[in-house]
Image (tube, rainbow over all chains, first blue to last red; front, side, top):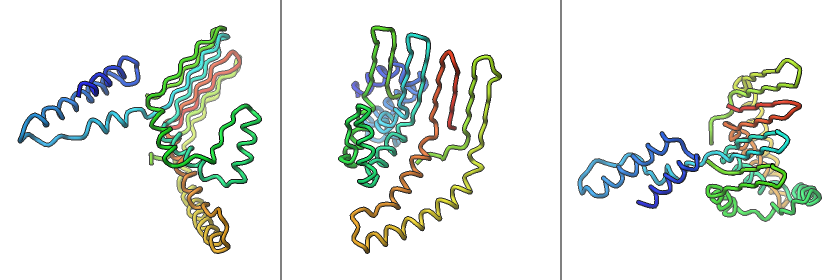
Length: 146
Length: 94
């Protein structure tokens, strides 16, 4: 229980959730705790664990370059999942061409080996992912989910 | 599956020019996409059946089509903002 509470507070501190979302999650946690302690209390409305797990809905990519250019992209995590599932269905011949093209551009990733379980694991891992890059020339890149 | 994207809001502001603001009601395309999707689905099912009968290893065009439509639907909520000296682009899929 304490772990869930601290996780919510951490997400609030990192700006991944709003104060209202944190409040509703903490309320849900309290309701679950009250329901667990009372032998004959009212039914719990909703499972806060599901809410916590469902929280990161977007993948954010923010780039601030030294020369003032800025890129801000907000991608639904559902789109990432759909894209990965779609990738695993591309015919082998087309996938070979894609892999060759990506390899030519320095990205040696073989998407043909992606399994459904791998996709779920990748999307699940995205929830905990946070990338911060501060380059020497002042460029900043930040990738995170919220 | 999310609600399909209903509106595409696109703003392009080139330097020293009047900004362009496009508000595209994608929901007007839904009936056409539905009709085309159903026709494509029937075609994909027939193709898969033929490929399966012929013993081809790849016969997943139906799933590929459904996943493509799902990916299209999941673009709902996507936001892209680009700011540079040359231009500023804001794209929101709602």
